[in-house]
Length: 251
Image 1 (cartoon, one colour):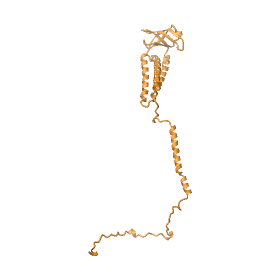
Image 2 (cartoon, rainbow, N blue to C red):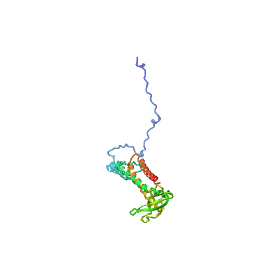
Image 3 (cartoon, rainbow, N blue to C red):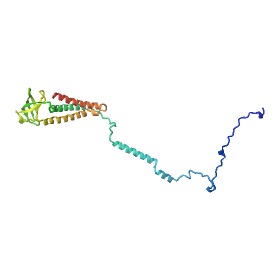
Image 4 (cartoon, helix red, strand yellow):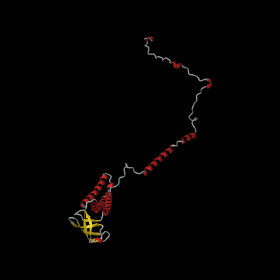
């Protein structure tokens, strides 16, 4: 087959020139002079070291920045160390009280609670109006730091030998004095006015409350980490039960 009959392959098509390609580049006027290319050398055109040092001097070096950050953290830690504990912050756990000292403290505080409650109960009842009036004849009386007198109390329908408290001393031996007591089952009678009754039960109640606080501390209830409020409430419940039982017996 001759070359004239060879199949012709696809010929590339030329893209027509756009109008912008034939726009000539404008030349600068002669008044501005000829444009010359400028070459930049990084070695020769670099600023001197003194200029670089002055530029870095305003911000400081990396070591200066780390020293400033360390100083800020040290001041923050120092202020946090001396700052008082916040209410919501967890307090360090304290060791619970040992069994033997706690048991001994509970027994001592329980005895004090019963003593002060028994001392205050009769006078407290008579101050609140629960009393029977009568007369008492002083039969015996002994001198001392706290004079101890006894007499026979007579009410409307009963009489009984009782211990006398209040404004009575050896000079009243053999005399009949007005007195009051809580009832036929009472073991003591009071001679005097209402002011003396208040002075008999008010100090005893103050000491009773102090013994109740001592019971909470001696039992180690405040040292517990779990169930502390329940333990403190149990101590106060025990103190209230002692006062209620004593008042019931002194009725």
